[in-house]
Structure formats: C-alpha cells, structure tokens
Length: 293
Image (tube, rainbow, N blue to C red):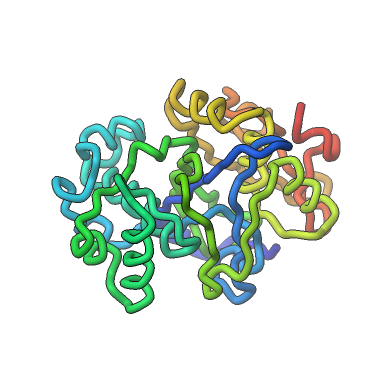
C-alpha cells in the first residue's frame, strides 16, 4: 500500500455507490464479494462489494417512469443536506447499475427470468443501462436498497493513493431467483462469503481487502440473519465515516470516529476504532479478536 506524496494537491472527491448484497445460508448470512482485476486503478486485485463511480448518465434516468420512489424520498433516506434530490436519485441509480454491470443482479420491480435474460442480452450488445430499462419498460426497485454507511476517503489514504471517493454503502437482500456472475472484465472472481470467513481469509493472506471492506465485514459479522441486517439499516440513518490517518511507532494507521486520535469522538459503528498497517496487513491493535470487540 503506497501513500500519496504529502505535498501532492488534494485529489478530487468523486461520488460512488456500492451495495452489500446479502443472503442467508445454513451457516449464517453471506455477503457477495467480487475480486477486482489486478490492473484496476482502484483496489486492483482486492475483494470488494459490487459498486463504482456515479456516472453523469445516472442523473439522466427518467425518475418518474423508471424509479419506484420519489427523488425527495431517496434524498431523505441518505440524510445529507449537502446534496439535492436529483443527486440522491442518481446515487441510487448508480448503485443498481453497478451491481447489474458487475455481477448481473438487477434490482427491478416485477422482473421475471425472460426480462432478466433480455436485459443481459441488451447490455452485452452495448445498450446503455437507461436505454435498456426503457426498452423493457422496467422500473428500478430502490426500496430493496437501504442506506448503510457513507465513507469519505481521507487525504492520505492507506490504499489507492491519488483516488478519493464519497461512497454510499447500501445493504440489500439478494434478489430472488437471480444468480450472481462476475463480468470477467472489471471483476475476475466472485463468491458468497460469511463476513467472519472473509476476514479470516484476509488474516491468512489469501485475499486482499481495503479498510472500508474490512470494517464493513466486521459490522456485518455481528448479525445472525439478513432480516436483522435490514432492520438495523431501517432503524438509523447511514453512519458517516471519515477515516483519519496518522503515524504511530513508525507505522501508518487509520482511526475511526470514537478513537482518541480521531477528531470525531462519538463512535458511529461497531468494530475496531483503529487499524494499524503491519507489513501489508491492516490489523486492530489487539489482533484478530479486535474485529469483534
């Protein structure tokens, strides 16, 4: 993990959206993760949740015809007075679009197998997402997505130097009768993982994770069902996470709200309050068990 030069001008912050798609299993809840292509300019080779940047076209979707909720409602759900309703709607559109493009799952109302097949065929033929929805007469199911958290990349991020994002994390139950498949372009592998299992794989060095994914997995690992996760999301506004990076004992570290090195002293999420970069691994100060304290 390479740091940006201290004297480099601040990178622009780009809006993004990602979705924690979860399903129940006999062993406990699982979340869909995809592995980015090693040459990706953001989190190359890492395991991430499906998502990406908000595109200009996301704001051009016909909200009245293609959204199941009014933009004002979507704005209220994000709990952010610094954006307008149209921007909130675009963020939701981006979340649905990125999931569809990266793993083939489509959150749309009344979607049957034939409509999903046609949607995939149109996408494969290069038809833009908004046009595909229009041709098939589909309306997005934004009610399936609950705002979960909001992550703003710090100036001196521990990964993807020079890239900064204002990313809205949503949580959703996996759509019924649909099967995730990675696009074999931006994503080279996909898997349903129990949150603790994913963190154990990271700890062994089998997979690569960035801090937002680590902390989100530690959060999800506290629930015993997808319904419990969704109930948690419905019970509160999305938590705002602005990590603070610093040096400690010759190592780089990131503090989260509630840590004594973070300017915001109120904890906003469960899990460790600090991650320290030891070698190539981000660790709670008290080891693996610190993910669950």
